[in-house]
Length: 549
Image (cartoon, rainbow, N blue to C red):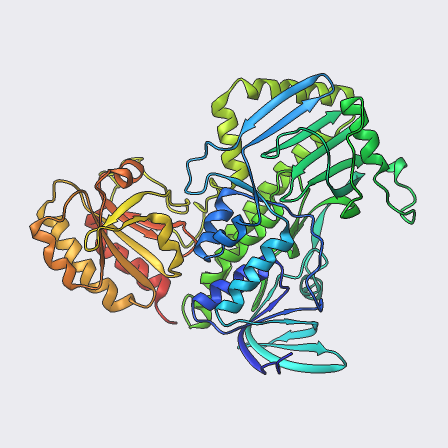
């Protein structure tokens, strides 16, 4: 182990997916951070498994997605059955997104890919290092770290607890973690099976005596079943695969041959949400502030999204930009997302695992109805994928002061995730996607010009191409989007510090409207939108958000 520094900008406690995503993005921003984990080695087992479309966008921005895909199984469908046969088939390939998949990959493999990228960026995970105490002052957090038998003091501008459901950071802050625990207990097994079920699909069997979930792994399958409380009284008895064999026999009338489990675990489901995400210079992310049922594979995805939302705000704050209002926006944006997710997942879990005859009947009727409504199924998939998460009520998103007449109701609203679009670099001819700009951890200003340029648009384009890079070059990248080939009136734009892109296939205009100003935040959400005529209001917004305090 290297000698620990005595000072850092950000101390991150917990090297799971949430902590690693936060640390990688901070390294991309050039922010000094220290990532610690009290475990001497990564844990070999994990309950988290699925990665949704929005998370894949984040992993691509971190340059990790390619490595993760090599360790994954791509899901194409979810098949749900009851004791009488098929109930509902969900096609998971129809998402309108750059990565319209669900990947099944164990959390341990995700962590390994993230760790490799963090180290490639010059970072190092300090393992076997435990946070045992911290206190806050006006300008820093003082922490005591236990390394073997030694206590090492360290000072950081901010501390972020990504230390899981039993978070020491949350408990030390005295924050509530209110919620409920399901009465059922659950068993999990990673096994190989000699059955013929499709390896590119997830399968759920909802029987009167209980449910069985089967999720494909790169090698074998993960099985999850529920047990009533009375069947799980003695937690000291050794676990066996026998309950899985019994449940499989109830489904298939004969038991597929099970291998010895590579992992066998007992767990219970809880739904809990921290009362606050921030106390002055200390923040929480991931399981430290929300835990939920594994149904729908939302937990790891939500924690990764927490970190991606938080990273750019932390990066600006430690550089003296944004102040407390910027850090406050993390909780006001992310906590409602977690609350809605917890409520939705909890409802699905209770209905999925219920043994009550009336509840099961109502559930099965609803599923059959959804199966006949493709649009409803599509909305359900988008919600699961977290593509529809928005921050429209955030205090740090806005639109211009003038009426947005040129766009009407077209395009994303402030706070929405910005949809992807295919564009072409005017100078190189290279094809680019809007998603590609997330690799740059700055804000991205897209100045979208109309096909029929008028004098006002030309003047505004040159003014912004001059003023935005001169005032905010280290925090905002400026991109001009023309509707077709670059007009002669705009050729001198190439002399400015801007990128010029061609919407030659009309994909951007189709998703956003005919013209406007679109400010994409480093997390891919729309921070500001306005007509071209509101360029002065845009500059005021940028100064309020990004000027040093």
